[in-house]
Length: 86
Image (cartoon, one colour):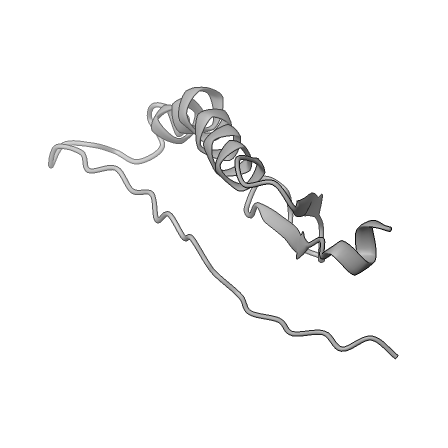
């Protein structure tokens, strides 16, 4: 039986937008959020994956554990030891 150690690390980004007092709600169709999803989110995901991949010896696998991919980025990161490489 293999021995396994685990730790978790979370990065959480909370988005919001503020509007003038005369804003009627949803007037822009949540464009502020759509812009984040379209432009910023892919760069954040890419940066996280690139940072993880920059250190050799790690197996990086995006996983889904029941949460929507639009709401969470979950990544399994496993250290590949010399014993496991052979």
